[in-house]
Image 1: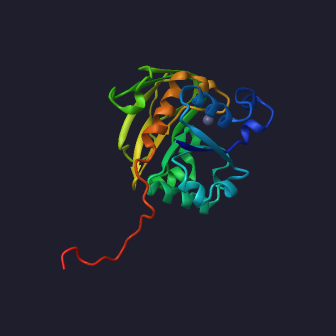
Image 2: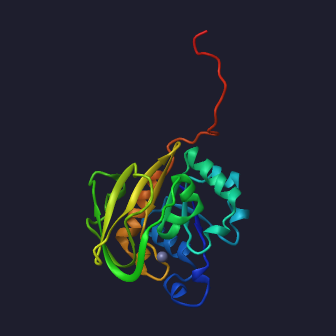
Image 3: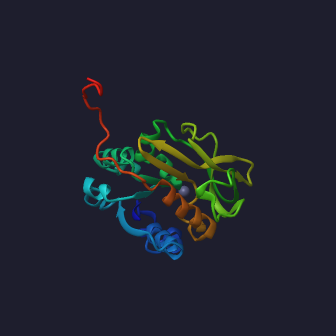
Length: 238
Ligand code: ZN
């Protein structure tokens, strides 16, 4: 399973709580956590700094699943790269969008909506209630999945109605959030999962890591097609 992990990698490079929580970056810590429970994952990485060099058409062709974590600099992600990624998803590549990636250009373009959330940062306790015990993404994940401390993302979340709503998060502050969903676009699948603020320990939470691992496998392509376009054809029966 070839997984390309894009992490903006700006917060954790500067001295402060994000670097203390995720030394080497969220991509380094989370990929190590995932590899501990799944030896089929082969990671490569891209950051804001090098994404134009790393994320090429050739690279996307050989990528099964792209993970996306970004926050402050969505606007600096190259539009041609965004277009290539959206095409790759249409051709069957899987996409896992984490936390503040909900406002990334890639996610917004694939959703076709603003993808805004209501939010506050109080390091609150959250609880993800899993709605379908038969879904592949929740296998081995405790229900409810307790989140020790997170940034609160709340409804209304201005996304299309999810194709598969996997979990709903309850917050201590009284809000709820559809933060665990799957969307189908073209031949591809997209898993959105909300935990992962840069200064909070969610990517050390075994239930969250397990859900991300399941999500990677769930959105991985069964088939990739070369090109999704229109073609002029002759009638099948002459
Ligand atoms: Zn955040």
